Image (cartoon, rainbow, N blue to C red):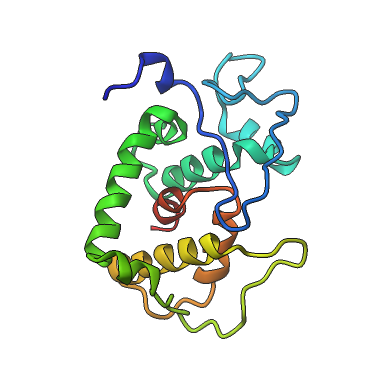
Length: 184
């Protein structure tokens, strides 16, 4: 099903997949929940220099998924136009990302029981993941296992101790599909 054209301008919202807590939906002055993310007063469009300044003052939690994935894709693909990388912020691109993730999950876990019983790779990180303020729920543990198995099998990493805590941090503000694509 094709989304309305307007959905290509509305940004995805963050959600806590790991702990299941509600994400603060307040958007600070200067930020937008649709294109442009924040217009420069002079040019009426986004500006990299302004983005750095805005990030230093804090990304509103509800926009973290949109900002993190588009910034990561922009940094990894500097040859791509900004219009391309900024599409990853939108609801319109979410369908593509989710469909790709479903394909990854089906290839890694062909049977539902495989998914339920998955043991996540630790990538050489022997510390136990925990959050002082929040308890990781069972669905969050399963989501983390899915993302880590996807990274191990599709990216080919086997030793990178920062991947598990990075994936856990992303899952505090993203779905499994977005966490996977941001790390990938």
